[in-house]
Length: 158
Image 1 (cartoon, rainbow, N blue to C red):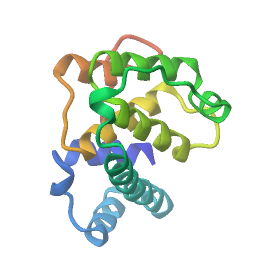
Image 2 (cartoon, one colour):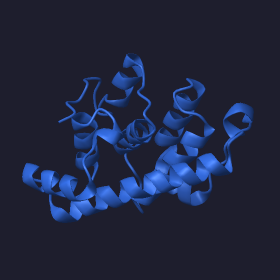
Image 3 (tube, rainbow, N blue to C red):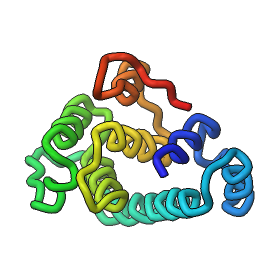
């Protein structure tokens, strides 16, 4: 699923540049992605849009007035781990994401996996949340989102 998300990010500069779902399924199949993975990725993206709309409508003032500390429940701690939580806090303190985007990232990370999620996958989730909202991180943050956690070399997107 994550390979498909990265492929979509690289191929379509903006989410509104993506073709319809049916055409996208055909294109992804033609590129060589498996049908089950395509279905998972498209469902995940659909749920991302729903979550974004729900949270944005529900908490319109939260971005301007949120100064509290986020407390993570056990399920979030188990899925994200300390490295991912630290990275989320770093992104929020650097003003790359706001509190609503943080919640969307956490929700989508939990939706992506019942097990612990790697920092690399979390970075893809952050990138997709920003991409889905038409926001692009600055070049330094973009590099940070695509550094491999095993070494300091930028990884190839695709």
